[in-house]
Length: 255
Image (cartoon, rainbow, N blue to C red; front, side, top):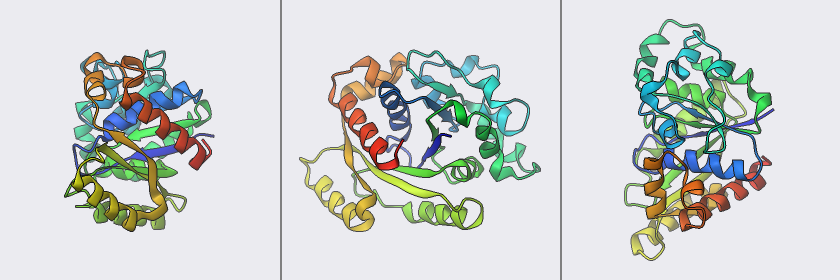
């Protein structure tokens, strides 16, 4: 049985999708069987894994609305080293499509149960908003990984996400927990980073992961080549940082 981890933050530009792709790749290099679910209508996790989102004949939306089984949509044998349940712009219709569905918040959970034995870890890249797609991810997940950029507005809007997590926990998914807070685009040389770092430590305590993801040009370049930074520039600071993150999560979550 796999562990399911949702990566979410309704604030965009925090390295959520980049972290989803590169964490998936890093876990795969550490011999974990990994599935990455792309729930973001932008489809960037699919693209960053080497999939042409415009050429998809079906996506995770078809799974959510019951038109297809996850096993038939999952794309494997990717250079990235892990499997992907792809997403694209079709997901913008999810709110309307699921409006009259039975148990709309649990559609993803039901679908992933059927493939969970095939994987050690399932990562879900959520959209940067608290909508029905994110609710589906949180209902399916065992844990939540929250990427945060060390900037002035780092904590802005976070209370709404934590409230949503608590609501999901109380209503449909009592096992849901915050797996960790991941600091991204991290530069400890700046006073702002150090100040935000202090706030995060006070606010989150042990939930704050030791691993940090630095600003790194190779991490930024890798998506345009359709491969994770672990394949694009294996020895780069960014690649090494994601490997350290993967090892920390393996130990912390017994992956």
